[in-house]
Length: 464
Image (tube, rainbow, N blue to C red; front, side):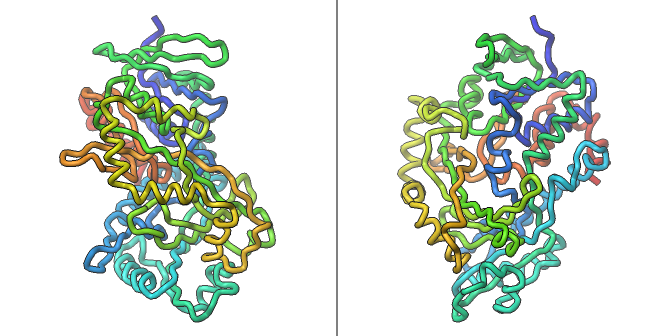
């Protein structure tokens, strides 16, 4: 039998990688295996072209601060996300000091701006601003409804705009554009130099069995088409939408309690240097429909491999894949007799979302350009091309009283003895990856007190 591994990580994205480097720092002698079915690392949601690169800190994302029924603004989620993101920044700064990460090649300073049009939206933004500036992370936020000021912040967005429009914006200068895939690559480059860390590309986990005191993982070598077994004490499943399928195979979740709702996306991209250089901000707008939190459009300056680009989107697309490089049969494989009722109820109770996704999927490029004109009045359609972005799987969860809980976030799932953990769901995973990894450590090693007795004090020093 293969030697018992301390922990197996399934998937090579930023959350698996964050967990790997934390465990290596805390327990340098542990044997860590990471399995990735694709020929390279970070090819799915973590990939630089598959996300907006926003360091989500609650500065500009209006869906983190919803309007309440009494017209007040709830800022609690923005404060929470900011705290989680700052944990990531502290840890990445530590890795930079340890020469594990080249901070200047992965994290760039860029203003985060919220921009709105219309009386109601302007009033909402002003209330949001007045609430947030009372808290330290938001003390430097600026607000303006003056065309002259906004023209300095976002010249492309203001150029050619009707001056009779009621507009406003908030701006924080210390926002970030982040290359999450390069963070992942640099960390894994460091770990692969360690004798006790092993990364296996083109290896697919096909099944997981609980052997009471350890787990057997059945792994297929895709190059040579043979299957072998790896025994391990602990498992983390972090392979995006495919996580649901593995949890079902391992009998970790009740098949009547969870299902998946896959959503693909596209961005419009501009590579015209004369246009790109005029926009240096991440500009988020208001939610198109209050009940669809995935519909927040944004116009993002990006730095990718040292070059500047301009992206607008995302545009949602219906898909049956659970991963961009997955199979069109993924969603059908996840449907079991037990969860059909759950899926049907979720569809009926979220019919507005289904209609929205159908509408977005049928939008032509010209229709998407017309939406961009709301932000960029003088847009030249010839400067923009559509690119396929990442694939997300939203969680459909059975609740006590209903079958309609569609979750726009992520959730940690674990076995009864906590030795297997997994993350279901999507945003804002990459920005909060370090906090998620720390939470996974607390859960996974709950029974043997590793965290409380051996790791807690060391982590405090790292995250000062």
